[in-house]
Length: 390
Figure 1 (spheres, rainbow, N blue to C red):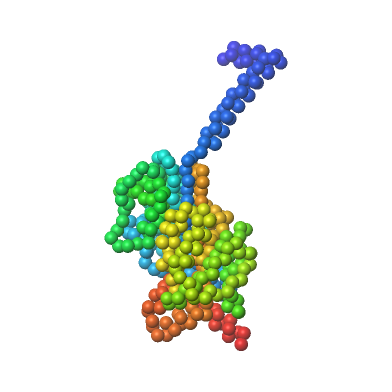
Figure 2 (figure 1 turned 135 degrees about the vertical axis):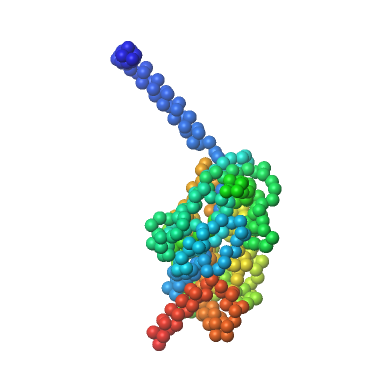
């Protein structure tokens, strides 16, 4: 060993020897760096497209109120896995009900990916296929999601994506909105579950959060809708929608200003035109046409039901901040398009609910379903404010 070290010192001891020795090292480092650079720059030939919905309800001051978004029984197939409902405290409340995000993959070859999603001030409540880990698990430390010490998350460790898989996906006898999301050209995927492999067209998950919304919506005294952006990135587009019985109306606003006023829509519209306009907006944001159709098909019975609401495109910076997504290997393209559904408690809604309560009209009350509690709270705030101004 001493002889070898002496030879190195000797050859590097002269200026010529030192230069020759260093040049070899530089060459080696250059070659290794080049190899790593080539490996890093190799395209993954993978695309990931995601869509989902953030559902909330606006209070009298225009910001999202806290409500209990899990009061209704699950509207999902029985094979979907979920956070144990026995562990949910009845008082669990949040501002956002994140509904049916699905992540599609497109690949020309078979490959394995890992996917992790975190949810700011929130928890993941349902998912499919089987996930390697969902946090938190077990009993929640608090019913107030804004006080959670750690954000909820879900992790799929080994997701095998392959364009050549065929066969039927799991399905139950009863119809369900869940299945509409499968009607795309995305590559099927497979995940190992507790009782065997689970094959699906996408990764599916849901959750609840106490995060604030990227906008506020308030009715003005002259019955206009005042929309204010609270995000660093502007709202790409929104639709002011209203339904009363069999009549619907809507107004489309693209590229709105930071503060935008829009008049109440006339109830002379039709669902097919609304669908076409909404799908065009979703495609403009980056979804493929069949993905946009699948999204609207999944949620049209909910988005276009009784009441008044703002249907808006959630800014991408807000999505990445509140719902950070990591996929390995990193896709060459990753598109994320979320639609916000913000319920607006108008005087017409308050009158309809109060009349139904007085007459015990269960048909009308069911139309407002899970929003009844926050609607009554907002109505109480409106009545209190009105009494003070007299």
